[in-house]
Amino acid sequence: MTTLRIRSLVGLAALTVAFTATAATAQTCTPAHKFPTVAEGKLTIAIYEYPPFSTASSDGKIGGVDSEIAKKFAAANCLTLVPAIVDPAATIQYVLSGKADLAGGDWYRTAERAKVLGLSWPTYLDQMGIYSKAGYSKIKDLEGKKVGTVSGFLWVAELQKLLGSNLKLYQNPVALAQDLEAGRVDVGVDSFGTGAYAQAKGGYPGIKIKVAEPDPRVQASIQAAQANLLYTKANTELGKALDDAIQQMHKSGDLKAILKANGLDPSGSDVGEPRVVN
Image (cartoon, rainbow, N blue to C red; front, top):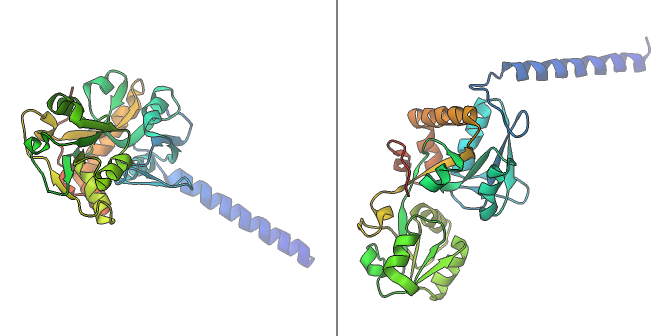
């Protein structure tokens, strides 16, 4: 037998072993649940840059709390997680139009969203934060000052009623942070978790970030919003599987670990029973 022939047989044997090992590995993965997805064998999540809840890099890698939850859910069901990195405004639309199975990025459980989207079991609480150089923590501290906040939060409507033209809305936290640092607004109102994470990374120099003290005029200061992963409302099988996975993560302590790893207080996983806000 020639040397070339021997090498060919050895190479063929190696390929056969590799293929068999790969097939065996695939067969060892037993999904916890079975449900349809946008692309077979894949779980597509629409996500945007909003650390520490969701992060997205130019090379397509994603991270943050919601991404880690989705990664665990995908792995438990033998699916490859595929990110669709989009603008915040397009995230929900990707799910509604059938381009993605899930949407991540600190989305709240609200009655309006429940009309058109599936809401998962609550993942964590997102507290209302007050950002200022003076260290304000009370809603009454905002009165008579130029205040900025980000559109879409639960407190926006009540702050508009309370502050009127003194409240300026921003499309994202970055624009708010820039105006706050430049003194174009006196106070910022945003997610406490977002600010705490950014400050730990060197952001918001000279700014004190406090959890808003309870005030009946702004309900979000009394009861923190429950975040969740959004999914296609008609895909009830996926919804049941997602709820089960998230509840298991609560019981195992995985969610506390995910929050801590992303610079957040693990107590944020103490969500209580599911609820929606108007």
